[in-house]
Length: 186
Length: 178
Image (tube, rainbow over all chains, first blue to last red; front, side, top):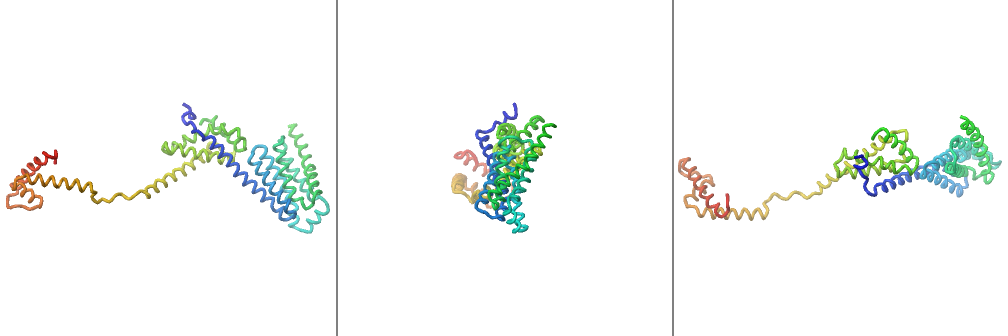
């Protein structure tokens, strides 16, 4: 007699185990989402526009938590997006911390600071997404990146968002194209 | 669990940790008999079933935190061992609490029932003694008090022995035995 036959699982145990698994994932997702929001919070505190920026912090935490809850490519995407997005999120805050006048000067002179942060984020995302295709990864990655990046670019307004988007494309596309060619030929 | 099953568990638990729900069923089917048998090695059968269920729920509750670099079976049994230990501690505490909560043993004073029986026996003995001759009754009364009449020891012992024999004979008639 096989061990599995000798120990037949009681009725309802599988359902309880599945519930325990989902609860475990939910707890972990809440912790990770909260941690992500806490990590992005300095961007909210240091660069103004707190209403919208606050909503973006919450949305950022939610995307990370939802990715963790769903798992698989969604989780990998949201994690990559969060790592990439933390640079444009915190770069303006770091500049402001260093010199508040410099922060306002850079914001008023155009979206360069957002574009620079976006470019770094694009490179990071490009490197992490070389071997990945499909909506789950890229959808969750871009959502996390957009919310995190937006937190830092609110003071620059619409131009800041445009700069962020251009920076991401400019930084990420070459990396993706180059590395995929190498990946494909090897 | 053989090497193949162990490798399959490693693969499936890794998938489950990454969020692939499709791996749940196979992990459950693989783990339940292992955890049940493991618990059975440490606990009596009626407790092993409960502890194994608790351990399995704990394993699935933590499955999302499983590190694929670790050995899946060792990890699962580690979680189960901890849960079994918790179960044993809880059971021991329950036993201790129930002992503390148990009522004090009854007073060793004689119960009314025992008193009634003793009273009946005393009355029966008195009746039997009253049916003996005066000399037998006096001999037994002296023997019971520890008095020694002015007689040689051997003679007194003989009289006591005969008086007891006659008392037993009287006692047997209504009571069967002494």
